[in-house]
Amino acid sequence: MIEILGKTPSINVRKVLWTCTELNLPFTREDWGSGFRSTQTPEFLALNPNALVPVIKDGDFVLWESNSIIRYLAGRYDGQPLYPVDPFARARVDQWMDWQATDLNRSWSYAFLGLVRQSAAHQDAQEIAQSIAQWTRNMHILEARLQDTDAFVAGASFSLADIPVGLSVNRWFGTPFEKPELPAVSAYVERLNERPGFMAYGNRSLT
Image 1: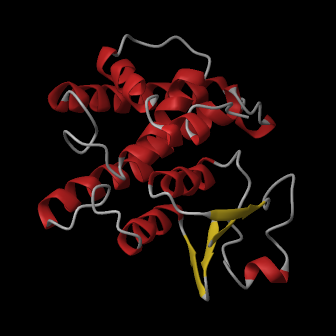
Image 2: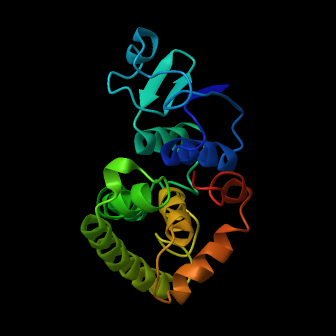
């Protein structure tokens, strides 16, 4: 039984929950993070010195960093369809996962915090506009990729990369600002909506 420490509003926690659903892995979850149990306690810091969620416990094995966690779960629990053994196919999955964690994730952070979370520290109009511009540029990159594959991010089949990217796409559509038409991205969301894991943990409230 996988133990997951982290609150469901966290996009990184939902990566792990969605992955467990894809792998049919039983799990338990405890609420940790802002608004719940503090991650600054000695108990939590002993598990993750960065004081961030998620953390998993798999027996005696403890792991943090959401992308590392979902790669581990797919590698340990027969997730080859999600995370291929072939080095070329795996590299493509890793490429898009890392792109989400760096370029895409960083671009939407300020706009999301300002417009959805209404964070007082993220209300600079110029910074919001810059974040939206960078986010839109990255979404055009995703649009072009999905036009090429006509399916999923890493290719014809759903993979581990679609979990972090799909969660970010959900935030794109849920953040209130004027957006360009991205038909391939819209079709991608329709395909994701056919997956129980996305319906449970990806396509949900942003708060």
